[in-house]
Length: 225
Image (cartoon, rainbow, N blue to C red):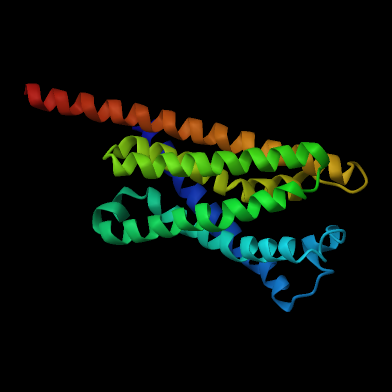
């Protein structure tokens, strides 16, 4: 009972964290509405801001990623799924289309010009490939009626989606201009965000598997009675 309560509390905290950071990201993103190319992240990308393709993908990515974060967040509530099956499918399709049609191509191009040197570039490209792979497998699984596998791969897909949040948390908590080389820190941070999120996803999948086994045992006991 205590373990189950602890898992629920962690899930609630995770939901609030994603909502709060999504709001903060919206605030950060709003500065780019002006079209100024010398603010925020763009101040560090002066060598590519004159490339119209890079700029197009940059704006596409930043103005769609928050929708992706919030859309994915609704997909893991069992109560929401039971009460809003049709809405669940609609939001799920929005999440998938957002990733596969908009953000995976955009992030691939952005990744090729990533900060952090070769470390950062390879980290972003691997994230992008995993993002596409996990999302496609989740879609194929639900089409085959394999709900558990679908849910597991959606969790993995969302783990990649939220690396944007983990990346910023690490940067804001750890980075210091006087202590670290920006390019090296940036590249390492890309990998740290990926590894941390995949470890959290693994823990969630393991907890869900244990919970499913407990439910099966309870069902067996009731059947024997």
